[in-house]
Image: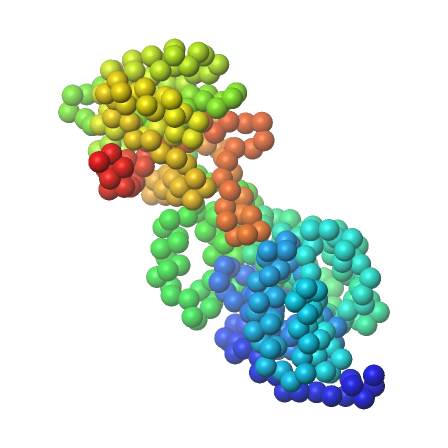
Length: 404
C-alpha cells in the first residue's frame, strides 16, 4: 500500500478564471464561497476535490440531492478519465486513483449516510440547501482525524446557517476560515448583457440573491413597490378604454377572482371575488361582469376549468384559456413583478389583494427552478388573477396568437 501511495500522475485540471484562482490558491483550511449563479463555483469545487484525490487524499463532494450531485459527478469524470490507471466506479459514484486517493460523490438527503469515513477534504455544493445537521453531526467530525479541510459553495438561501457560516468566516471569528462573495459578473466568461436581461425579468430581491449573491433579509419577497402601486379606487367602465380580464377559477377551497385591467393605462380598475358557490351561479356571475366591462380578452386559467371554458366560449365570450404550467406561471409572476418594480402597473387599494401580494413567496428549489406561491394555508387567487390580466399587456403577441 505504501508503494502504491507514492505513485503520482500529473493531472490536467480545467483552467480557472482569476476570481476562481483567488479562492483556490488561498491557504485557508475552511473556505466559504457565496456566489451568484454561473460564477463557476461548481467547476472550482470539482477541480479542487479532483486535485486533492489525485494527490492521494480522500475527498467527498456532497450535494443537497442526488440529481444535483450528478452535476459534480459528470464534471469529475470528465477531468479524471484521462488519468492512467484511474478506476471510475459508476454505481458507487466513486473515482479511485493510483496515488491511493479517492473522490466519492454523495447526496445529503439522508444525513446519516454521511457518517463513517475519515476525510482529507470535502466540498459541500449548494450548501445553503443542505441541512445544518449534516455538517455538524456527520461531516465536521469526518474531518477531525486527518485535520481535513472543506469548501462550502452556494448561492444564498436567505439568512440561514450558510449565511451564519459565511458571516463568521468573513469576520474571521475562527482562525483558518475565509469567506468570499462573488457575483455572477465576476466570471469573465459571462456576458454582462445577459445578466442585465435577467435583472429586468426577475423580481428585484430574487435577482439580488441569485446574481448578486446578496443575503437578503426576506429572500422570498417577490413584488417590490406594492405600497406605491396601490393607489386606485374602483371606477366605472369608459367607452374609450379597452379592458382585459384575468380569471383564476376556484379550486376546492379557493376563490374565483376576476381582475379587470385598463390595457392602455396599465391600471387595475375592478376586482370580483367569490367562493363556495354553485358552478352554474359562478358562470352566470362571470357573464354579468363581462356584460358590464366588455373586455377585449379574458385570460382564464383552465387547469381546473375545462367545462367553464367551453361554456363561456359557446356564449360568445372572448376566452383565452391558459394552462399554467410551472414555466408559464414563473413567466407570469416575473412579468408582474417587473410591472411593480418599473411602476408600469397601478392597482386597487383592496385589502385581500394587498395581503396576498405581500405574502406571496419565491422559493428556489435545489434544482435551480423557482416555485412561486402563497404560504401554507393562505390563498394566491388574487395574485394569479392579476398576473393573468397583466399578460395581455406584458405579452400581447402571445395572447393574440392564442386567440387566433
